[in-house]
Structure formats: structure tokens, C-alpha cells
Amino acid sequence: MNKMEKILVAGMGKSGEWAVRLALKNGISCLLYDDRDLSLPGALPDDIACGKDVKIVKKVDKLLLETVGLVVISPGFAPSHPVRSISEEAECGLVSEIEFAAAYCSGRIFAVTGSNGKTTVTGLTAHILKSSGAMAVPCGNFGTAFSQAVLESGGEGDFVVELSSFQLEHVQHFKPDFAALLNLTPDHLDRYSEADEYYRAKMALFRNMDAGTPAFLNRDDPVTESYSRYFPPNVKWIGKTPDSTVRVTSDALYYGGEKLIELKETRLRGRHNLYNAAFSAGMALFAGISADRVREGILSFQPIPHRLEFVNEKNGVRFYNDSKATNFDSVVKALGSFPSIRWIAGGRFKGGDFDELFEAGKGRVKAAYFIGESAPLFQKKLENRFNCRISTTLEQAVAEAWRDAVSGDVILLAPGCSSYDQFKNFEVRGDRFREIVNEIGNEGNCS
Image 1: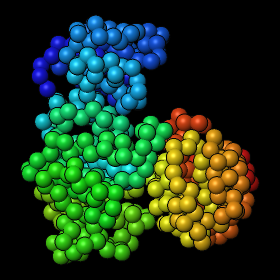
Image 2 (image 1 turned 45 degrees about the vertical axis):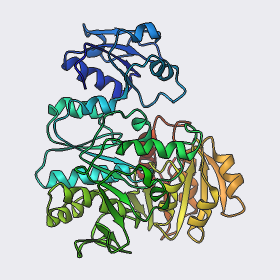
Image 3 (image 1 turned 90 degrees about the vertical axis):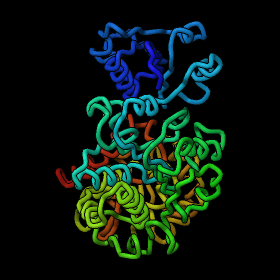
Image 4 (image 1 turned 180 degrees about the horizontal axis):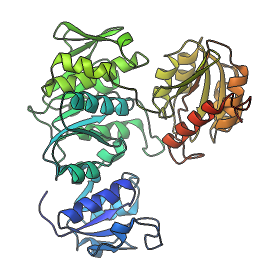
């Protein structure tokens, strides 16, 4: 990125705040814009609000953009947001926080995207690298902003960056050293006009990759293969076929013809996690980690919170928190992981095929308990297929599922929706589920 004196940071969430701090550290002054009033007390962290090279602006127009060298835009700003269109019309450089941070990164970048499994692969890859002695940081959509990770490390080390489609919409020069596209299923149809628009946003990950930067792709995902025109030169396949770089069987992974690990040896639940482990293993192996170290890293990995996370067992009933299952494909995988399920679902609907949910849950779902805005829709679509009820709140759903459960059942939170109707984010929803479960029996009930 060329040296510049001033940038506009549009969107002052976590990624925007850390982009500002990274910019100031590198001698760049910042104009700050957000849809909320940043001049109100507490709207900005003190270190940013009091910065001498920081100025709040309440309007973005072409005249303002003539004074800046770059616009760093929040992933929360939808494609229709006026700041995006004005920046594009003004021919001002428009990039995501991910690309801005990468410009100050001298270490290796492991980029992970896909519709499902990103957080697990990001966390597992970083864990394998760290357990092998590398200085590795999971970041991006994972929780720690990429700019924060770069700023705090001085840009050195390995950065395993989880990337959403929103973060990839304005990739210009971003070039990871290793990349993984795990799978493609419809998602975020409340933001994109059609699935193809969402898929093409994902493909921006490969825009600048070359023969020296391997990209790991899912050979068993037909949608991924249908976008082969976007693939970079150096593709490494993950899949069932014998010629796959990391081969996935029904219960194990193979590399170079040798068994790497069996699923039953790990703490990971569900066959889909074999694919997640295969992607992490592939990137780590090509980064120079030995097969023995990769195996050790997978064995010692603790599953990510809110991703098929075991919470507790009471009277033979097990509770699993899959609050991060915010789309239907994630729910399909979750439902396929257990034989006797009392399923809690619902929230803010983002689109999806209810027939897929029925097929995944057939013979497995004993009852379903629906919460949030989409509860009536779930009830309407599935009431003739499952034993269903509208529970409205998470507290009520857990109470009703626990009342109905018998030993051997799994009470599974796998919403298939975003959390924003009732919770700040999926983490808060999952934390609340965990709290409710752990309160069961304290006073003879879970209320």
C-alpha cells in the first residue's frame, strides 16, 4: 500500500477501531464516519476520541473524499450503503480492514473462508502452528480484528485469518500465503440478491494468488467445483478421491498414503469435522509442520465455543451448544451428528431450504422448539414433519426440552438463524444457553 497521510475509516465497530489505531501507529491521520453519532459521550474509546490526528465527520461526499488517500470500510456496511457508492463514484481507493491490515503484515497469512466451519478451521490451524512452536494468532472474523493482531505483534508471526464474504467484498491487493475455501452453501440472502453474488464475494480470496501460494479446496463440494474459473494456479484438493492432497474417508484422514488421524481419537464431533481437520492439516503441512506435529496438534485441540460445544450432561441427557450454526447447512451437519435430538432453532431468518432440514432431521429429531422472530415460519414449514412447538424464548425452549427429555436424548441449540432479534450476537446467545443449562437442577427447574 502506497504511503499516505490521511484515510477515512467508515464504520467504527471493532475492526474500524483497530484500523484507526494501526493507521495512527503508522503516522496516518484518520477521518471517522459511522451511521451513529460518534460525537456522543462513550461512542468512541478514549484513546481514539482524544487522538490529535483523529476527526469525526458526519457526512461523506466527493469533496471530502478528495482529501483522503483511502477509504477503509466496515464489513457491516451493506453493498447499498451510500458511503460505498460515493467512494466508488469518486474513484477513491476502497478496501476492507482486512486488506488495510495486511499491508502492515510481514508474517505469513493463512486465510480461511467458506460457508461453514471457518471458526473451527481457523482455531485448529492456529493451534497446530502454536503447538509446533510458531507464533500464531487466530484473528479476523474469529474475534480479534486482523488490525489488532498486526498492531500487537508488530506484523510478525503467522496470522490465521477467518474471512467472511463481507470482508472479501473489497479485496484489491490482498494476497494470503495459504488459503482455504471450505465449502459453499447459500447464506446471507438478506444481504445478497442471490447465492451467486455471495459465492463470487468468496472467490475474491483468490484474486491475487499465484503458483507460490497454495489454495486448499473441497473436491467433494459440487458448488465449489462449479466456480473453477476463479481458482488460482496452485490448487490442493481436500476430499475422498485417492489423489486428494489430504484424503478424507468415513472416519480418518490420510496424507501421502499414510493415516494421519482417526476422528474417534479427537475431541471433534461429527464427520464434517474430518473435513475441517483436513483443511487445517493441509495448510499446516504445506507450511512446514511435520505430520507427527500436525497429528499432535489435532489431538490436543479443544473444540471452539458455540460450535457443537458439549455443555453438560444431566440425568443421561446431553446438551450441545451450536449457536454459531446460523445457516441451514450448519444445522444439517449438526442434526447429522446425533441420533436422538430435541432441537432448539429460530432467530432472525436469513433464508434456507426447509426440505434440507427435514431430510437431515428425519428419524433423529424427536421434537423441535422454535424461538425468536422466525418461530412462526419454522412452525409452519415443519409442523407436519416433526413434533414442533413455538417456545418463543431460549429460556422457555430449554425448559420445555428438558421437561420432555429422557436419558439418551441430546438437547441441541442449532438455530439456523442470526441472533439479532433477541441477542447481541451468536456468542451471547450461546453463553445464555450455557447459563440456562448449568442452572438446571439448582432449584429443581431451569427457570
